[in-house]
Length: 577
Image 1 (cartoon, rainbow, N blue to C red):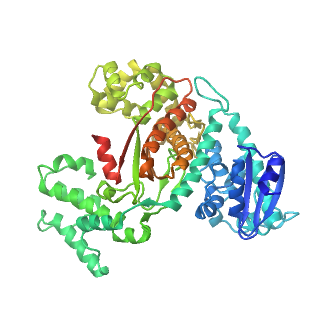
Image 2: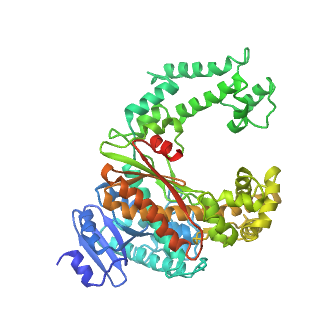
Image 3: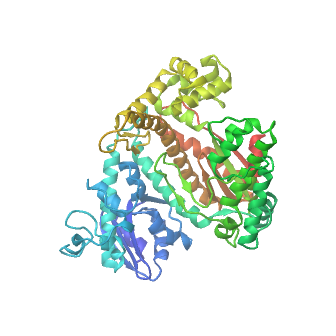
């Protein structure tokens, strides 16, 4: 009997958690609520592929370790339960390794990271040499790969994963559902499903990469920073020549342009008394002062050289024309996806090089005014929710506040970010009058931060705000308050974005396309040209479908701008028309 048929007969059904531990070259071990199974095989990925027709919810400690080898050989599981992702959600973990996940689930102190921990006598005193030590923590021998010694060990490891999943699911079901019209399953559980799917998406993004035209990017770099230097001497000469374009405006002055304090002093000598030298402070003076204009141009080139220069091209762009960096499903603060290799901060100058491959097109989707719309949904403010029914919600907000649109935007952003000085302070008073429920929601979050009380985002993610031992000084408490005020909005917005991305990922499989970039509130898809229309429709219908369960009962309308182009830059230009 085939393995899939055997598991089906044993009661493994679609959506049921199926824990997986793979021993390369030997086979895999499975655990589900009704049983256990070892499958010897020289090709475990093929077995996982066969079991895909059962559509289980694959369960593993982290997608980074278990799913990455499967993705590398073309196996793309549809749904999963990532214990690390659920642990971040449920316990506010900053780490997603099995040691931290297990400890949090059992109320134990977080153990040292593996890199900082050596063997402990407790690891050697387990009666059966098993995975759980006498103090309840996981054995470092097992954490360092001992679980993969044989299929029997892998079976025990899969069993622990299933046990942890069941405990996490039970705890998430107990988290209060904040939706105006609670539904089954609860929102925290649905968030765990989405966060798990995005942990898998992060593995896929790391493997697949972003399509980049090497010839185009080389031309852009050459125009911006000059030819690729032949050696270190040529590189230093190019650097000096680039500095000279700025320093010529300051005869007799020799400073390090990479030192902000020296640059501030330099600008002070020509009449610019500034608190700092941030670009946004300098930009208003560029049109009237050649020295400032030269400094800003230098900074753009310097950023390209140091972060996106010739070394970056050689290190991170493969021969297949794909830019690859490591992706994380959630940062430690807002819960947003993050990436290495400059994927999250690529300057506009290089975006024309992000090009679709022959026969394909890039489809770009950007959520519109996502954070204020999220605030309207999570706070339950009906006035703000009515404003969020419009394509541009700042227009009705402006009417309610009795001001122009730019001021209304400042007011809403000031409310979410806790800005109280200048024009923002006056605007906040009008926000209190027009949208008291939303403002009360934000102030309650701020008070939690000021007093060191943990809170949860709308989607259920624990935000740890407890002060360090000894309490927090007044200034630090104020910082905690501002952080919490923003985190409840930005964190919820990140959860909605990722739930949407997970839904798009699931629907995109039928088009032959792939998500190639997740940038805060923006998705970039790479799809066959003849399926571009289907992909565009999917982006909109997926957002509508996600919003129906994420914000069930709320009248808030979420909007997305969708455009296509042969390059990322071309799609952005179409979006701005």
